[in-house]
Length: 462
Image (cartoon, rainbow, N blue to C red):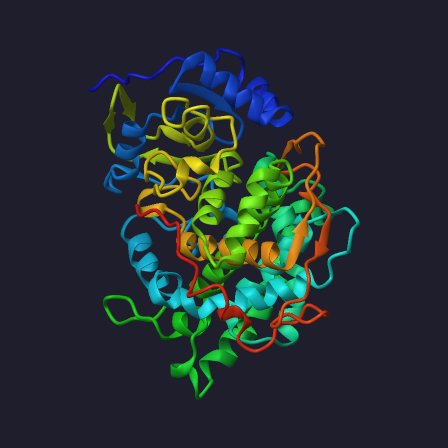
């Protein structure tokens, strides 16, 4: 039998390590990276013993390994999103389902969503207070939730209003349960798991009605929304997606498709307010119709403030040679997004917020990984990149964002995502009205086309 070869790591009990992560997550991970380097072993609640990696060559080898050797871990968001979610599926099932879901979020189809995104940004930003500080994150969440609802379902209605109310509650309690080892029977019918189950049943009932209505639509073949495409899609053997899988995948898109993007937008506001010269350059660029610095800025925001700080895999082979290490079957492996993005070898002066490092340079697939990598890289990465670009463009074009010398907002861990502790507070003032934007903030016809063609994606390919 092959002998396992694992890196060193902290020797404190697992519950102590878990407590350290809960109390001071970013500082704890950074401390371990500084002490043990690009590979170490931790032992934390829910995951047990895990090898943590941040060496690009080892990460690439892990991400590109065949699924019969390396696949997803059991403890993941599929527990909340359902057995038909991409988070739950493994191997060939995952490959087939991903193939069906990829077309709506790639290539020329992205241009279809640009006007929709700008419309929602303008609508929400019209409610922003003038000259008074407010937290932007809740507002950004409304923008991104409305965008994904319209992209997924194509139209509004009573069910939309129900989902707008339900989904934030579902995300909040699901995130808390994902982070904390709460027993399923805790407090019985009054406990958090029971409440989550009630929310999930309500969601399934709403979406079942939408699925049946869409399937019966005589104009189904002409629709561009994601649900219509799911219903019409077929696996390689000609069979359709089951209603259960559609429901689970829709929940995956609706939850993962808005919360992380909204958080990145809030972090972008937080960063720009503390970098006045960069902000000045961005405003000048948007007025000139450019986008290169804006795209570089969004890449850098995701490097210094990743919303998710690790992704995970599990070894399925009897043993797996990974660079310096020999990992046994069943070994959990964390890829430290924070560790890679903080590396001075990969990013000189890594703690500095410096978008110029990405001007004219595409981020490397195996060192800049806010969307993960390999076969399980976020399927909506291109969509999210475009959405970030369009929302930031709209903000810079229509508003003056006041700078501040206040201390930077600390990172708060909210179950799954790392969010600004004060929700990205901002003070804005509307810029002088332009011909295509009225005083009420509503866009005139064609406003989404100003600023050039569809926002160029900063996507990295896996």
